[in-house]
Image (cartoon, rainbow, N blue to C red):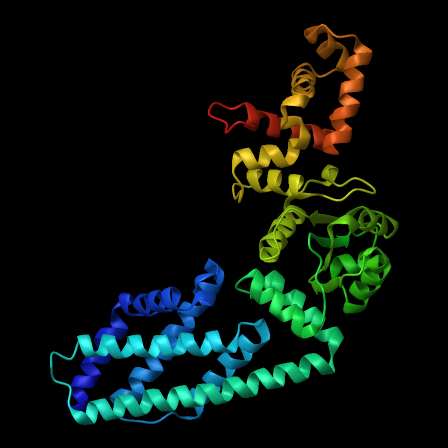
Length: 403
């Protein structure tokens, strides 16, 4: 096959969006670690696949060998995979599958014009690529292991950075990374985002990024409540991000209150959804009105989900949001409290609500206190009243899923 025929095949493959999708589909099907990747991580895999495909096809077209730029690309990929904890065996398997698929795609477009020179050139290129990739992967993983052992504080911060960026494919990958660091991560956990309460409370921190020392100081204050697991801390702009045991949320609220800080604590997400918890908390702090922040109290999952609903980007269903906010009130044994809540919200006062339900006003006030105890939301507070009203509206809408 003349080089012009290789160039024709290269142009056809690169110009067809199905080429990259076919490679991605093969890797997704044959490599379990990649089947668990979320959409964000698959987008990265897709971008890397397109770049690697371009380089492989170009080298084959000109009958060339790997060059310095190709080696830099492979080393960069290896370093990134080593840092995010994806198993080296899975990464190499993914590349073997990808290169095999490229071969099949090339064969499908040759029209029977493959000759021994083309086969030799393609085979040499693919074997060289795999051999080089195996070598740089081994070097990158060894360097990463040495780095993790030499700077533990940085390694733990990097772990949380990777978790909130979604760089781990599964709970298994997270467990493997934690094992290499010899740490036990909180499970269940509280992902806490904290920031200065306003310019008047902490002007220099409100205007600029918080420092790693600030994050370390806050982490140290809460470490006694960690219960034997390893809490983590990092920073994101003007905010501190902490991964704590779920039970430490109350102490975290008190610690922030003494510093005139505010925060959002997410406790209902799974170990492989730290990135989702981070986005939920960050969006909540970005959009919460001032009166949603109360002294000594953190925004919670319930606040965050209501705020995401109001912003038009809810990640939970209406039924899920109602359950998160109302908590035990959705249980059959507490239906009388849900009814009392509805009457109070509709009438605006305990006296009027009691009259509607034929209750003594003191009985109504008792039920309101029980509602506050069970939901951690006081219907007499404006922000709590709003979230409760939204939740009971969702619960009572036509077709609600049994809330």
